[in-house]
Image 1: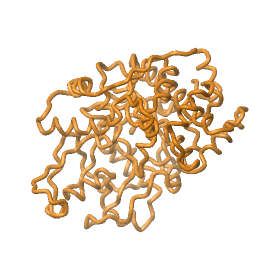
Image 2 (image 1 turned 30 degrees about the horizontal axis):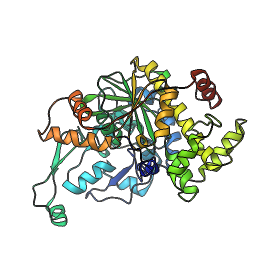
Image 3 (image 1 turned 30 degrees about the vertical axis):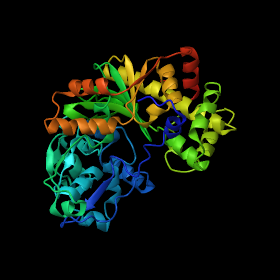
Amino acid sequence: MAQNSAVGRSRAGRSSRSSSWAVDVGLLDADGALLGNPVHYRDGAHEAGVAAVHAEVGPEELYAVNGLQHLPFNTVFQLAAARGTVRFAAARRMLLIPDLLAHWLTGTVGAEITNASTTGLLDATSRQWAGELADRLGIPRGLLPPLRKPGERLGELTAEVLGETGLPGPVPLTAVGSHDTASAVVGAPAADDRFAYLSCGTWSLVGVELEKPVFGEAGRTAGFTNELGVDGTVRYLRNVMGLWLLQESLRSWGSPDLGALLAAAADVPAFTTVVDPDDPRFLPPGDMPARIAEVCAETGQEPSRNRATVVRCILDSLALAYRRTVRRAAELSGREIGVVHLVGGGARNELLCQLTADACGLPVLAGPVEAAALGNALVQARAAGVVTGGLPALRGLLRSTQEVRRYTPSGSDAEIGRAARRAGLED
């Protein structure tokens, strides 16, 4: 949904800051009690699991099973890092965060499949837990709960929950695409399958919707992942660091007015400085402007001297990263792309939307901002019989009810290409 006011601009990029993500888990003991708080995915301790996993199953073989982009905090690495601990020895079930909440609400145990597909322990072809892989990695199969699909009824709120909330009951709980991107892709108001989606928040998830996974060394080395979507679809995508860079910069500066910074950044010449947003140095929290300056200096660019230039560097760099990912997704999947649907909090950022259209050379349709919530609600409404039809029908409802803003590409493709090469963002 378009946001033209200063208030809308000032909120751009702040709405998706999270304390957890798809891959985080809680471990339960034999009584169903949580064995300590889940560990945040940005915790560096998870990286110890990478070498342990790869010592048993090489990256190529792992990708041939799970089809996942390598991220050092994927659940499989988290569990491998936890092996040998008292907590892991006592664990009898692992529950991803949405499933843990469902467990507390209903008492049921399961794993919603769109989120389970991010763990690294799901076979992307069979859509079942990869039991043999778990065996080789020393992860007990009993830890892996039964799989559930979006639209399934999980149960009803327990008497204790009803008592605490004051709800009369019975109150059913329905599974949705609990990976927020799975719901956000449902919420992209696409008219046909010739689209790329860009779910833009703390992270940016950029890809295409397919009927089956795409394996192969080219996709693995390019960092593409096969995550499952609603109605048996595959989200063939790549993670881009996203507005995390902007959020951390604002925090370092004491949270100044973002609307004013974006207006000033719009006046900065394009591609004054550019970086690769996926540089691993940008992953942890910290002084992001200083890190950006460090990378600029290393690549022979004059480090940004003021806040507006830093913001423009971040947005230009993100747009170039989106360009590379959209083009690579089309090439690897064979899917023709005619439009980019940009959904999530980033849809409020008018400058980022225009820069993305310019960089990709494709029209960008921005909105809805709350695509994940709308996709969630549509799956629940369909399960309750309020609406009917597959994804085309659900997206048709969105097109008839949601305001979307169109950004038309402009600018020089040659100049964009030169900037992309300078940042190492041109294949």
